[in-house]
Amino acid sequence: MGQTARTTKLLLDFSGRASGGTNAGKREHLRATVDILNAARRFYLDFFLAHTEKLTDRVEVISKKTGEIREGIISADVLLTWAEFQTVETADHPTPLPDWNFAQAFPGFPTRYRRSVIKDAIGKARGYLKATKSWHVSGKKKGRPGVPTASNNPTLYAGTFTLDLDELDLRKSFLRLKVYTGTAWVWRHYPTVYNRFFERRRTEAGWEPESPQLVLGKQGAELHFVQTKTISAKKIVESKQDPELVTVAVDLNVKFLAVITVRQHGRIQATRFVSDKGLDQHRYRHLKRVAKKQWQSGKAVKGERSNQQLWAHVRRQNLDSAHKTARAIVEVCEQYPGCVLIFERLRKIKRKGGSTSRRLNRKHANQLKGKINQLAKEKAYASGVVSVEVNPHGTSQYCSRCGAKGMRFSLVAGQRITGKGGKLFCCSSCHFECQADFNASVNVHHSFFRGAPRKRQRRVRKPRLSEYLVCT
Ligand SMILES: [Zn+2]
Image (tube, rainbow, N blue to C red; front, side, top):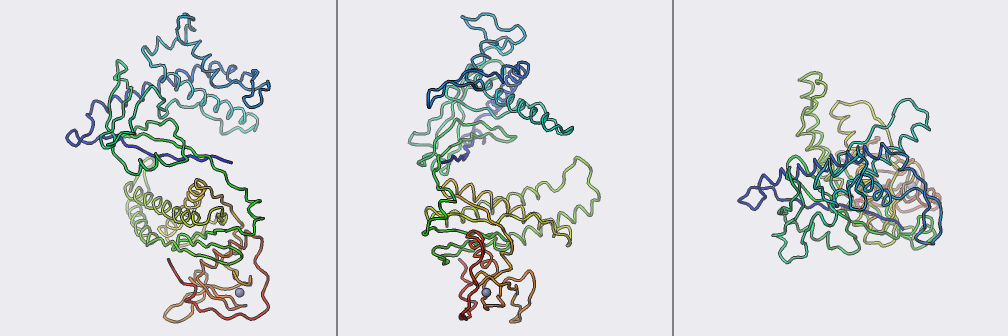
């Protein structure tokens, strides 16, 4: 059993007034609200850091499951009550600590917001104390944890906002939010941007909603809805015993971003090639331009950035292909419920040689591999598929059929050119020939089941190349 989370964004409409957006003044209110919440968080962070002994207090805790009483660390809820008692004036307790009078520092601050910043401050202060403690234990001189900053995206708990999403016409939905105008706390309406994708994700079964977060950027603002899902999946060790187990292996490459093979009963059942659709070449051209510009302008001034838009474009493209490839991998997994997803452990090699742009391009290609790996694992887990990493030793060099060492070659004008970067694979022992990435992908299955199959004695028919080059 495990848990996974995902975020879906809902944009607030900051377009022109005529096209249904909000007016400029309201945008200022959001900024003021975030600022005052940060200030309040700073207040409580300082308060807790001045009372660190309370944070690590050991108290008697009654276990909810068994009803047992044992000693444990003080809970965040108890701390919150204690902090409010110390800092806020109430009828029962008219005298808060003189230096820590919250009501005086922040008059009219809504209770819900106050509680949320206290909770945030507790988390931040505890994290800081823990990091400092382990730093002391490690005995290192460098790397002392810094005091946490107070800024955070405000979490909207019930009572600070309303959002009617179950209405018929979502095109006219409004977020009603309690904001700070600079002098007082008022309710304001913010139009949202209608989004079909958001609507589908929100109503999907099995996902539990959490409190949304308000993320205020330079241009716009968005609500981030976090949803969690409980996943029940078998452990790899258990799955491995199952004779009916389906394994999905992925080999990550540059031109074919992923080669996915599905295996059951020792046979390859399906194959899918995910092409990069010219991304590598496209990126190389951009990087060449960056390298040329840098060469022309000489050594960069420290603290200054260049080619920002170009870099952003390259980053966006990489991320987009990573998401799409990961999606393709998960789509294959979803066809075989209970399957296991296998990746190679990513190699950390720093290849030398080549021009600046070529090195840069390789670096980006490697980062893209890592991103696909990470995203595919996350997406697969959300649909109940566990993934595992195997030893990448020799997956591209050995024959996936007999296990002998083979060689790679390319066909250029009908001639066989042997070389390391060849697109095709040829086994010198059993004369098996196939696409090199496909061979590597099949070998990943073998690595998972420990070792390649036994060397076959009998002579097998030499398969034609075309039989293995079916791209989808
Ligand atoms: Zn062979």
